[in-house]
Length: 405
Image (cartoon, rainbow, N blue to C red):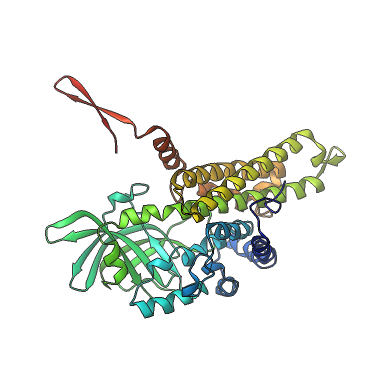
């Protein structure tokens, strides 16, 4: 098992960044996760600030804004290491890196806020899905109506993680005109005090089986007034398309988190197998266990190398839509299998909260759902390979074939 360190993709700078993230995870994230995940506690603010000091929130933020100006490769490299401790910590860095272009305000104000974002001191949250809208984001019903230089936002949102802890929420809305809702969309950035919901917004945390460390909310917007800013004008009418384009990096990030979870589960299972004695010898001597570990390690490394390749394509600004769907699909499916096998190696001990494998298993299951389900990824991949499926319509007893949408 190379664990990524001997890959031809790795430069000295990347290896150094990986070591920093790995050491930070072992020393600072793992103890916190082991303590707080069982009680569904939130990521401590001090840990977020320490991550900001290390530059984890500004990996892909351009240097002119105070970030590191690096690429998807470095972003995913760090995310994989952080996920080996706690997936929520690996996820929260996206609230900086992925959100800098959505920061609201005039140019000078935005520059100041983005510099704070790179330090983990000004972070965002995304309100995309709705109670009746999951994968089909083009069907959002939450509305934004223009009133001079103000948006008036009304409607419901679901699955908004970190809505309370963020400094602003980016809300995907359907544009509403004088005659009601239109087919066009806009994203509106709603600023708020850290630790609170915005004025005019009510909501409650959604009970989850995992992904602890922060809360995921359902929200209701009731005539929430938000200033119109330059970002809104640039995306007005095509926010859904912009959100879909941004999913490429998000899906590579999900692959990295999946790989980190799987690697952590494998590491724990191997250590346990060497110590657990049955029938007079360590269970690591048993062929059934050895073959499980061999298969797990192979699948992790295959996903990791596909992730590295995908990140290089993103950083080279080459079309990577199908690759990001492939790596997200492959890595998330792999992570559920590998974490489940790790739990099986631990036996009854794996089904307790005395070992972190159950945490990896619960969190790995989510990676098959968010940032586009496995089924959505399969659709994207097959559409790229085969073209969109033919649909048949009956018109006056004549079968008419047309390309589906």
